[in-house]
Length: 153
Image (cartoon, rainbow, N blue to C red):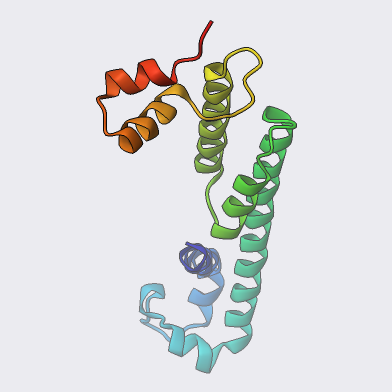
């Protein structure tokens, strides 16, 4: 994704310099006819300038992406242990909306697990998980396993 952005930025910078190049190119030659090889041979300083601008823009965009992910983690999910998701999103180049969806899914799962715990429950295993394991171990029906693993009130 980063290479595509870099190429896009390079092309955009080339378009911005169209007017200057048009005056300096051979007569009858169109801007669309200019190739990377031509720029490398005939105008290396222009190519370097375009590359420098593209890198600056890419770095600026990457910083903004990383900061937005970190800010979302700290503002929307304080103290909810989202560090692993944040680090993975930053390392993989994940977009903010995808990272936010992952954080919300973790939050939902954490809330669901906490809601399925009975008062004073010490394990995070849900009743259905216990029953499934019980059914496999004792080779019985799921109904029998659910009854056997139900917490007594």
